[in-house]
Image 1 (cartoon, helix red, strand yellow):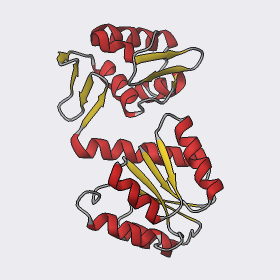
Image 2 (tube, one colour):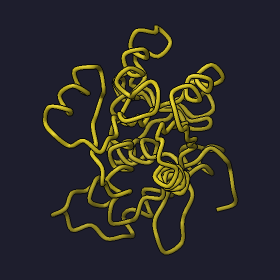
Image 3 (tube, one colour):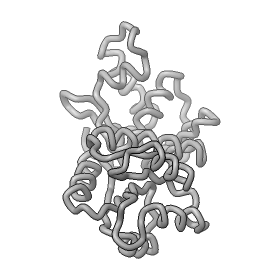
Length: 226
Protein backbone atom coordinates (compact mmCIF):
# COMPACT_ATOMS: atom_id res chain seq x y z
CA UNK A 1 0.00 0.00 0.00
CA UNK A 2 1.22 3.48 -0.93
CA UNK A 3 -0.20 6.66 0.61
CA UNK A 4 -0.17 9.93 -1.33
CA UNK A 5 -0.63 13.09 0.77
CA UNK A 6 -1.41 15.90 -1.68
CA UNK A 7 -3.92 18.75 -1.35
CA UNK A 8 -4.31 19.28 -5.12
CA UNK A 9 -7.13 16.88 -5.99
CA UNK A 10 -6.23 16.57 -9.69
CA UNK A 11 -2.60 15.66 -8.92
CA UNK A 12 -3.61 13.35 -6.07
CA UNK A 13 -6.12 11.46 -8.21
CA UNK A 14 -3.67 11.13 -11.11
CA UNK A 15 -0.92 9.79 -8.85
CA UNK A 16 -3.24 7.27 -7.20
CA UNK A 17 -4.65 6.19 -10.57
CA UNK A 18 -1.16 5.74 -12.06
CA UNK A 19 0.08 3.71 -9.10
CA UNK A 20 -2.97 1.47 -9.22
CA UNK A 21 -2.59 1.03 -12.98
CA UNK A 22 0.99 -0.16 -12.48
CA UNK A 23 0.04 -2.80 -9.93
CA UNK A 24 0.21 -1.00 -6.58
CA UNK A 25 -2.47 -0.44 -3.99
CA UNK A 26 -2.71 3.29 -3.33
CA UNK A 27 -4.81 5.78 -1.40
CA UNK A 28 -4.81 9.57 -1.44
CA UNK A 29 -5.28 12.10 1.37
CA UNK A 30 -5.76 15.85 1.15
CA UNK A 31 -4.14 16.77 4.46
CA UNK A 32 -2.18 15.54 7.45
CA UNK A 33 -5.27 14.91 9.55
CA UNK A 34 -6.77 12.39 7.11
CA UNK A 35 -3.35 10.82 6.59
CA UNK A 36 -2.78 10.40 10.34
CA UNK A 37 -6.18 8.76 10.74
CA UNK A 38 -5.32 6.28 7.99
CA UNK A 39 -2.00 5.44 9.67
CA UNK A 40 -3.91 4.29 12.73
CA UNK A 41 -5.74 1.75 10.56
CA UNK A 42 -2.93 0.58 8.27
CA UNK A 43 0.75 1.35 7.79
CA UNK A 44 1.73 1.73 4.12
CA UNK A 45 4.93 0.52 2.47
CA UNK A 46 5.74 4.02 1.26
CA UNK A 47 4.47 7.61 1.51
CA UNK A 48 4.44 10.31 -1.16
CA UNK A 49 4.34 13.49 0.89
CA UNK A 50 3.76 17.00 -0.46
CA UNK A 51 5.52 19.79 1.45
CA UNK A 52 2.91 22.51 0.84
CA UNK A 53 -0.17 21.25 2.69
CA UNK A 54 -2.97 23.10 4.51
CA UNK A 55 -2.53 23.11 8.29
CA UNK A 56 0.38 20.85 9.19
CA UNK A 57 2.88 20.99 6.32
CA UNK A 58 4.82 18.08 4.89
CA UNK A 59 8.03 18.77 6.78
CA UNK A 60 6.16 18.82 10.09
CA UNK A 61 4.45 15.56 9.19
CA UNK A 62 7.78 14.02 8.22
CA UNK A 63 9.37 14.99 11.54
CA UNK A 64 6.42 13.48 13.37
CA UNK A 65 6.77 10.24 11.38
CA UNK A 66 10.46 9.97 12.18
CA UNK A 67 9.82 10.59 15.89
CA UNK A 68 7.27 7.75 16.11
CA UNK A 69 8.67 4.24 16.55
CA UNK A 70 5.93 2.77 14.34
CA UNK A 71 6.79 4.98 11.38
CA UNK A 72 10.44 5.94 11.99
CA UNK A 73 11.66 3.70 9.14
CA UNK A 74 8.72 4.29 6.80
CA UNK A 75 10.04 5.17 3.30
CA UNK A 76 9.05 8.73 2.32
CA UNK A 77 9.39 10.57 -0.99
CA UNK A 78 8.88 14.32 -0.66
CA UNK A 79 6.78 15.83 -3.45
CA UNK A 80 6.68 19.59 -3.86
CA UNK A 81 6.43 22.47 -6.27
CA UNK A 82 9.60 23.87 -4.78
CA UNK A 83 12.62 22.76 -6.75
CA UNK A 84 15.45 24.72 -5.21
CA UNK A 85 18.51 23.00 -3.81
CA UNK A 86 17.75 24.55 -0.41
CA UNK A 87 14.30 22.94 -0.19
CA UNK A 88 15.69 19.60 -1.35
CA UNK A 89 18.36 19.66 1.35
CA UNK A 90 15.80 20.54 4.04
CA UNK A 91 13.59 17.63 3.00
CA UNK A 92 16.42 15.11 2.93
CA UNK A 93 17.94 16.40 6.18
CA UNK A 94 14.53 16.02 7.83
CA UNK A 95 14.55 12.32 7.02
CA UNK A 96 13.07 11.97 3.53
CA UNK A 97 14.40 9.04 1.50
CA UNK A 98 13.97 10.76 -1.86
CA UNK A 99 12.70 13.98 -3.38
CA UNK A 100 10.82 14.82 -6.57
CA UNK A 101 9.81 18.32 -7.70
CA UNK A 102 6.67 19.31 -9.58
CA UNK A 103 5.99 19.19 -12.42
CA UNK A 104 7.04 15.57 -12.81
CA UNK A 105 6.14 12.77 -15.18
CA UNK A 106 4.10 9.87 -13.84
CA UNK A 107 6.54 7.30 -15.16
CA UNK A 108 9.39 9.09 -13.42
CA UNK A 109 7.40 8.97 -10.18
CA UNK A 110 6.68 5.25 -10.60
CA UNK A 111 10.36 4.61 -11.27
CA UNK A 112 11.32 6.44 -8.07
CA UNK A 113 8.73 4.47 -6.11
CA UNK A 114 9.93 1.14 -7.49
CA UNK A 115 13.57 1.95 -6.80
CA UNK A 116 12.93 3.02 -3.21
CA UNK A 117 10.73 0.01 -2.44
CA UNK A 118 13.30 -2.32 -3.95
CA UNK A 119 16.05 -0.78 -1.85
CA UNK A 120 14.14 -0.68 1.42
CA UNK A 121 12.76 -4.20 1.09
CA UNK A 122 16.26 -5.56 0.62
CA UNK A 123 17.80 -3.39 3.34
CA UNK A 124 15.11 -4.44 5.80
CA UNK A 125 15.54 -8.18 5.59
CA UNK A 126 17.08 -9.26 2.31
CA UNK A 127 13.83 -11.20 1.91
CA UNK A 128 11.30 -11.00 -0.92
CA UNK A 129 7.95 -12.78 -0.62
CA UNK A 130 5.19 -13.49 -3.11
CA UNK A 131 2.48 -16.03 -2.41
CA UNK A 132 4.22 -19.22 -1.30
CA UNK A 133 7.61 -18.11 -2.64
CA UNK A 134 10.33 -16.64 -0.41
CA UNK A 135 13.65 -15.40 -1.81
CA UNK A 136 16.51 -14.45 0.48
CA UNK A 137 18.99 -12.33 -1.45
CA UNK A 138 21.70 -12.37 1.22
CA UNK A 139 21.62 -16.16 1.64
CA UNK A 140 20.94 -16.79 -2.08
CA UNK A 141 18.14 -19.12 -1.02
CA UNK A 142 14.65 -19.76 -2.41
CA UNK A 143 11.79 -21.71 -0.88
CA UNK A 144 8.43 -22.50 -2.45
CA UNK A 145 5.56 -23.64 -0.23
CA UNK A 146 8.11 -24.34 2.49
CA UNK A 147 10.44 -26.45 0.33
CA UNK A 148 13.93 -25.24 -0.61
CA UNK A 149 14.39 -24.91 -4.36
CA UNK A 150 17.74 -25.20 -6.14
CA UNK A 151 18.05 -22.64 -8.94
CA UNK A 152 20.79 -21.77 -11.40
CA UNK A 153 22.35 -18.30 -11.11
CA UNK A 154 20.27 -16.91 -14.00
CA UNK A 155 17.08 -18.51 -12.70
CA UNK A 156 17.70 -16.89 -9.31
CA UNK A 157 18.34 -13.47 -10.89
CA UNK A 158 15.23 -13.79 -13.06
CA UNK A 159 13.00 -14.75 -10.14
CA UNK A 160 14.44 -11.96 -8.00
CA UNK A 161 13.78 -9.37 -10.73
CA UNK A 162 10.17 -10.55 -11.09
CA UNK A 163 9.64 -10.48 -7.31
CA UNK A 164 11.20 -7.03 -6.94
CA UNK A 165 8.54 -5.83 -9.38
CA UNK A 166 5.63 -7.89 -8.04
CA UNK A 167 2.37 -7.35 -9.94
CA UNK A 168 4.14 -5.24 -12.58
CA UNK A 169 4.42 -6.49 -16.17
CA UNK A 170 8.05 -6.63 -17.29
CA UNK A 171 8.63 -6.63 -21.03
CA UNK A 172 10.83 -9.25 -22.61
CA UNK A 173 13.35 -6.57 -23.61
CA UNK A 174 13.60 -5.26 -20.04
CA UNK A 175 14.15 -8.73 -18.66
CA UNK A 176 16.73 -9.64 -21.28
CA UNK A 177 18.60 -6.38 -20.70
CA UNK A 178 18.57 -6.77 -16.91
CA UNK A 179 19.44 -10.46 -16.66
CA UNK A 180 21.61 -11.07 -19.73
CA UNK A 181 22.93 -7.57 -20.43
CA UNK A 182 22.53 -5.07 -23.24
CA UNK A 183 25.33 -6.53 -25.33
CA UNK A 184 24.48 -10.17 -24.88
CA UNK A 185 23.12 -11.92 -27.95
CA UNK A 186 20.22 -13.69 -26.32
CA UNK A 187 17.20 -14.98 -28.17
CA UNK A 188 13.74 -14.56 -26.70
CA UNK A 189 13.49 -18.35 -26.56
CA UNK A 190 16.23 -18.37 -23.91
CA UNK A 191 13.96 -16.32 -21.63
CA UNK A 192 11.00 -18.61 -22.29
CA UNK A 193 13.09 -21.66 -21.44
CA UNK A 194 14.19 -20.10 -18.13
CA UNK A 195 10.58 -19.16 -17.27
CA UNK A 196 9.43 -22.71 -18.02
CA UNK A 197 12.21 -24.12 -15.85
CA UNK A 198 11.36 -21.74 -13.00
CA UNK A 199 7.70 -22.73 -13.08
CA UNK A 200 8.59 -26.40 -12.96
CA UNK A 201 11.03 -26.02 -10.06
CA UNK A 202 8.61 -23.85 -8.05
CA UNK A 203 5.90 -26.52 -8.27
CA UNK A 204 2.42 -25.23 -7.39
CA UNK A 205 3.84 -21.74 -6.82
CA UNK A 206 5.09 -21.69 -10.41
CA UNK A 207 1.59 -20.66 -11.43
CA UNK A 208 2.26 -17.27 -9.86
CA UNK A 209 4.45 -16.40 -12.87
CA UNK A 210 2.07 -15.09 -15.51
CA UNK A 211 2.68 -14.77 -19.23
CA UNK A 212 1.27 -11.51 -20.60
CA UNK A 213 0.82 -12.25 -24.28
CA UNK A 214 2.74 -10.01 -26.62
CA UNK A 215 4.38 -8.14 -23.72
CA UNK A 216 6.33 -10.21 -21.22
CA UNK A 217 5.92 -11.66 -17.73
CA UNK A 218 4.88 -10.72 -14.22
CA UNK A 219 4.58 -12.43 -10.88
CA UNK A 220 1.56 -11.87 -8.65
CA UNK A 221 -0.17 -13.06 -5.52
CA UNK A 222 -3.06 -14.89 -7.19
CA UNK A 223 -2.85 -18.12 -9.11
CA UNK A 224 -4.55 -17.71 -12.46
CA UNK A 225 -4.66 -19.92 -15.50
CA UNK A 226 -1.57 -19.34 -17.58
